[in-house]
Structures are given as structure tokens and as C-alpha cells.
Image (cartoon, rainbow, N blue to C red; front, side, top):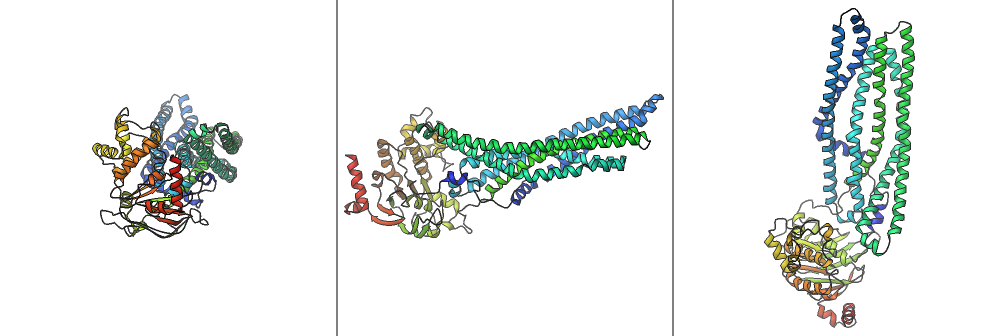
Length: 603
């Protein structure tokens, strides 16, 4: 690309990018994700409730055994003891089965929520405009889809399970303890006050701490992804040590952020245990005194102590959940920021369908555009491309050539003015028809993992193998494809790694030819080809460009020679316009000078 656009790495690396939505947005997202699973959550809650009730019967039955069944057994009546034993066995079996149902159903619901969340992120990010992807690096998107979702996975898989069980335990045990002995129950529940103060203290400090961990891990992933995507450049310029220093700093920041979070966790979990232990000791001392003075049965005190342990032991689970909740909340907020992004190129409110076949007449009327508000790449451009015409754009880097290509492709909308296809503003044309009518081929010739044939048919998924082969033959790609180990079924590997740059570009040309657009844009599309391959492609281009509108952006004037018309740009304005022959004959013109320099370089 030849135009200056904001550095997406720098923009995406900024901690405040993109703009932060209201904090409640993550809660709205969570409610929206949970809403379809009310029935499954109801089953989970019911299973958990009955399981906790079943487990709660054990201390009560042990108290009955001490106060009633054992004295009866001493007199030879073992029936009460047998009934108590049977009750303990039944309650244990029932609690175990219900625990299985609870864990299984909770896992199903949790994974369904995460499945939907991952799907939403993927679909939404795919729908966002090119401007988002130019400022929001792939590493940060990957962080949202993997690291942040995994943090929620940890919360739903383990933390939520522990929380539901703990809360049910606490509610039911509080009721049972109140039934057994009100003063002792109030003493036990009074310990919740310092626990609430501890959780409140933790929340105030944990929220920013875990937000910092999400920011820092995102930057680590960004650096990792970008380094290995650009590994050839890294090794070619021997930048490994410099990259190691950058990674070490990011990794150190992540470790420091985690250390802060772990210090808070190290205070929370032991704090809950200490409060529970102190409360148990107080209840035991007060209860023992009452037993000694005859104010309380020993069996009741025994049941009370057993219930008390079940009351406070889950506090550790609550603390672990609360810790996970802070991390998951920070992760969900990051995900909500991405899902809150709106496409800068909005779909038409009332889509207009162009008359078929689309002729391909393109007009830019008083178009103004800038990537940054203060900098106008195109101050006020008027350009008309006739249907079926091949127009070449020429100019220095930053002249506005690639920007025009992006506007015609509707990767961006103009700040003012209009871009029209067959007389209709691009902002009004139905999306599916527009994307079929206008296709751009860029200099990188991106290929997806998969076969050669699949890549050629990428824009025409219903194409037959014969149609794929004809497209490859038309652009001169069939010969080298036939020599590949498995021909059209050869796996091109990641980004077409097993093919040369020229071969990747020929496959991209085949893909565009098969799609048969009314308007074809070539943005430096031959820049990666060697001279013999470029000559072959130029011959093919005459076939590819026939009967369609074409916009060619190229520094190689050998590619420009096949154009019907050449427009020379400078500072986003047209300074020369005419056929190649006319502009070459214009002595002293910029195109004539460029052409003369190019011809001299061939000698």
C-alpha cells in the first residue's frame, strides 16, 4: 500500500484503545449470554439444592444417634441406630448422585455459554470494517478469543460450581442452626460481618489489579503473534536480541501484574479461613460451657460443630470464586469492548439493488477523506471511470492511490462527497451485490490454509473443478499448479508458505477471475512478481480485464502500459489525465518523466 495509514500496532498497543464502554456493558453481555439457558440453570440449581439438603442430614442424624440411638442400643434396642445408619447411607448415595447431575449439567451450561461467546466474537470481528483491523492488531483479537475466554471458562467450570454449593450450604445450614439453637446460631452468623468487610476491601483493590493483568497479557500475546508472523524480517535483520528485550519487558510487566493479584489472593483466602476458625473456637467454648451447665445437649453441640465446619469450609470456595470473578470480570469487560465496536462502514438502511448486469461505471464526486481528521489524504477529488475502462493510477507514495482503491472497495466511506457505482452511492447498494461486483487484489496475495483449488474458489464457493481450472488457465497459473505434488489438491499450508510470491499472486488472480466482478482493482498486485512471471501475468491480464472496469495501481510502468487511461496524482489531486501515449508525448509532464526514467532503467 502506498498511502500513509495509522500504525495499527501502535494504536492497538495503547491501553486505552478502543474507547472504553460503560462498566455495566459487561454485565449486560453476561445476562444476554445466560438468558437462553434459564431451564438448564434451573435444573442445576435444583440439583444443587437437593444435594446440599441431602448432605446436611448427616450432622443432624449423628446428633440424633448420640442423644437417642446410642442410649437405646445400650438397652438392647438397635432399631433407632439401624434407622440412623440407613438414613446416613441413603443421604450419602443421594448426595453423590445429585452431585454428579449438578456438575454435569453445570458443565454443559457453562460450555454452551462459552461456545456462544466465542461465536459472537468471531462473527462480530469478521463483520467490522477494515479500519478496525488496521488499528486493532490480530494479537489483541486472539487474546480476546483465547486468553480472555479461557479466564471465563475457569470461572464457569470450577468457581461457579463452588459458589453455588457454598451459598446453598450457608443458607440451609443457617436455617438448621437457628432451629437447633438461636443464640449459638446468631454467634456463628455474626462472623459474616468481618467476612463482608474483607471481601469489600478485596474488591476495591482487585478490580484494577486484574484489569492490569488482562492488559499486560494481551500485549504479550500481541508481541508474540506479530514477532512470529514477521519471523523472516526478524531473522533477516538479526533483530532477535532486540525482540527478546521487548518481550522480556512485556513479560516482566505481566509477571508484576500477576504478582500484585496473587498478593491480594494470598490475603483473601487465609483471611477467610482465619475468621472461620476463630468463629468455630468461640462457638465451641460457649457451647461447651452451656453443655457443662446443662443448658445444651451434647448431641446438639456435636451437630452444631459439624454444621459449623460445613458452614465455614465453603468460605474458601467463595474466596476462590471471588478471586476468579475479579479476573473474569476484567476479561469480560475486554471482550465487551470488542463487541461494542460498530462497523465504521455501516450497512445501507434501505438497500438498493443495481440493475443486472452491473456495468461498472465508477464516479468519485467531490470526495474528501482522511485517516486522521486533521490530515486530508484526498482534499476534494473528482474522478470518473467509464464502464469497461482500464484506468491506471500513478503517483508518489502518499499521493492517495491506495486510498482511492479502498474507497471504491468500500473499506472506508468518504468524509464528504460520494463514491458511486452505476450512478448509485455505494452506501446505498445491497452488500451482497456490491461485494460480488467489486473485487480488489492486493500485493500480498493472501492464501488460506487448504488446497490450491479451495483458494481459487474462495470467492465462488459453488464453482466446479472445471471452472477453477479454466480460471487458472486464463491467468497462466495452470502450468505451475499442474506441476505441484497433488495439483489443485495440493495443500498451500499457512499463508501459502509452500508457494513462491509469484505463484501466490497468480492464484489470487485466478480467484478474482473466477469471481467475475464488474470492477477489478489491482493494488500493486504485480509488485511481488519477477520479470518473466510479470510478463506472463500481463498477457493474462488482457484477458482478465476484458469487458470489465479495472483500476490498476502500480509503480511498475510495464503494468500501466496495458491501461486505456492514466491518471497521475499528487497530494490527493489529479495533475495529469490521458492515455499512456498522450501523457508520454507531453514533454515535461510527470508521467513522461517517470516513463523516461523507467525506460532508461531497462537499458
